[in-house]
Length: 121
Image (cartoon, rainbow, N blue to C red):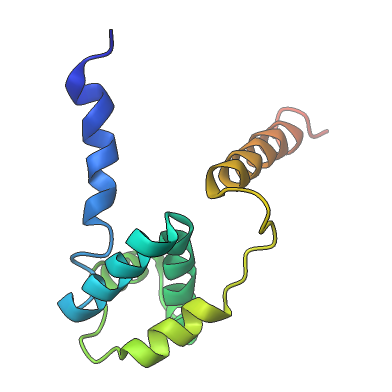
């Protein structure tokens, strides 16, 4: 039998997603929609944030990007954020998020094997 902490703690970490990076009112709205629409919405939210701040992020180095995304500007409006989220369309609408994610991870692993430096001549 699996240890209780090994099973439940990683699953509880998802409940902190966006709670520190977004202003409280926006984080609450994101979580309301997540409860209604499911986990795909959390992924689309992340992509929407990247789209919203794309021009700024492209001018930063990795450290500054990480700092910026850790605490987003307080002046972000729900209209801007939710319009960017709405613009993100998932291509596999007939599949569940977990199926899409598993497929992407499989493609990444296969790509890593094909792009291995040891295989290049």
